[in-house]
Length: 167
Image 1: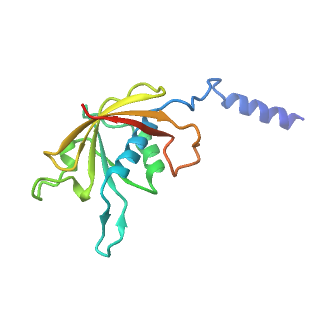
Image 2 (image 1 turned 135 degrees about the horizontal axis):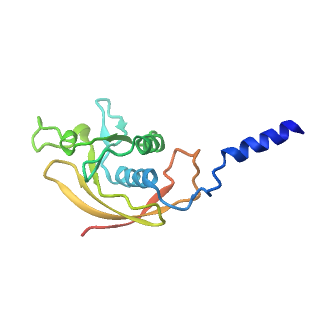
Image 3 (image 1 turned 90 degrees about the vertical axis):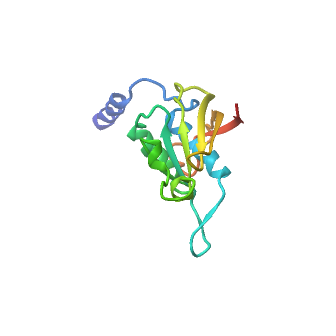
């Protein structure tokens, strides 16, 4: 009986009392959803043996800020099986200046992501997609929470892009 009480007390002590919002789109979920959208949009890249490679997608914050390391880790974990996501602090680091037209490195795409709104459902996120230094396309994406996925399901993001517009 004492062990059961101690266990119950331990669980209660770890509970902050705040409900966990699973129906909102947070930063990591928004970026993972944007990466999934981009991965579907991107042309496949083949290696020297003709095998399809994971799409390479660079993510850069529009204001030059470093994206939180925890968010980066969550996005990487959520996308590891279907995309190679690289975070950069500087836009210039994503382009290859040694090639004509300065394409995004590794035959990838670079997403210059605008400020991520406070968690809500849905959210709107503005971004500019680049395949080369002079090839930017602006988009506004509506991202909606997908409560059918769980924290332990890393094969799909917990949110999805439900609307794409170009200004």
